[in-house]
Image (cartoon, rainbow, N blue to C red; front, side):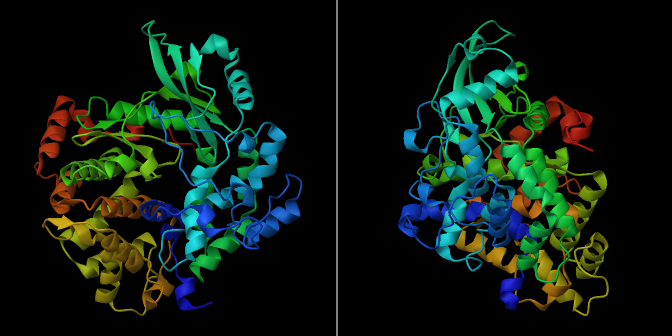
Amino acid sequence: MSTRARWLTVGGVAAIATAAVLRARRGGRRLADIFQPNSPSIAQPIGRHSRTGRNAQLATLGLQVGATYASTSARKLFASAERRVELDRERELKTAEQIAERLGQMKGALMKLGQMASYLDEGLPEPLRIALAELRSNAPPMSFELAKGVVERELGQPLADLFVTFDPDPIAAASIGQVHRAIIVDPATGHERAVAVKVQYPGVDAAIESDLRNTEVLGAILKQGFGGLDPTEMVEEIKSRLSEELDYELEAKNQRAFHAYYRDHPYFHVPEVIDQLSTSRVLTTELVVGHTWEELLTWDQAERDLAAEAIFRFVFRSLYRFHAFNGDPHPGNYLFHGKGKVTFLDFGLVKHFTAAELHTFESMVKAAAIDHDHVRFREIVEGAGLLKRGAPIDTIEAGEYFSHFYEPVRESKVMTWTPEYSSAIVRHTFDRDSPISQYATVPKPFVFIQRINLGLYAILGELHATGNYRKVAEELWPMTNAEPSTPMGEAEAEWIQSQPRRATATLSKTEPVSRP
């Protein structure tokens, strides 16, 4: 395996379906245009009892799309009350047995990891990269009867007693569950209320947990991408995060915490959780109607710039002030309302950070982006375990290698993001030709943080966002705490002043949402 093929940090694997999704959408390409039925490049479905066959597929990354589903390309849009999904009844999964048979093909944990590996232009063949980018949203929906059974078992009552109306057609179908629109009588007000009901596929938890127990295979896959790196901490972090994504009760706690923190925010909205209709396999929230990513791309540049600033602020305010972030920066997880207002969806993959971890992140930013101190920066990354202590490399070169990641905020200047610029940052960050890479590793706290950062870069590039992001960052960095630099910043400052606890609140001060 060449040096270029060996070097791919976990940020690349864990980060990165976003850019491929954006490229696939921009190019209008479909899986049907790439793979033809009965092609030898397509893996056949693996039965539920075929563990040997399943392991064989996992050992080769389990990355191919089943021929039955290769022709579907449109992503199901979440929480859009104006649209209905036109279901292909032949693709419905009508029994738990059928779902179990498809899990190895469509919904295994290692398939999810494969999806994340589709970011780098040069990392994978284009057909495979596009296929992986579409897999997550291309999962076949389960039939209404099967979804109804899950809801009734979980909530303990007939569907008709729980909901005034329940749309039998899902408005979104993804890798772990699907979403239905419904109407309830709100117990708090006695009035009817539109809600979104996310229903987990029967058996998906067992399939993913089975994959995650197969540590040897997962480690072997990571080693293929990471050369000689020890993948132990990467494996443990990925296992923890993907296991948590199966627990809708945990997702509800995360979402409640984000909703409470951002309550009355002038630009951000997190849908409210309906506690009485939520369990570990059913999650009910308020239904939000907004414009999709595709629609945003047709708006004028001023609107796109406001949306980009809002997403940037949400990401880094959540990280630096709330000590958590939603680790799934996918365009489908946003709804846009114009004038910079954004609704944020899907809190199943949330990473929480300790004060010590945040101190490390802040120290790295200060050394790399504010002080431009390569010596201090090397001390920090060695102490954090990102770089082997005493590695025989030049300190300035090491500083430039790592700190290029901070390039967009190293200087106070107006800049315009482009897809090419965002991709260049990614390629430099995961430069597999660099001699420094053989001395670098990825400690547990860093496994997923690059996922959201580089996913964010891809989004800003696709929007061609223009602004002074250094000044916006200075408002959000705790070590600078700068005055507002934009009208959005001024509105945020007023929001913070209305309840000062928000300036320093963390998840631990709201409710304990993390597992031990």
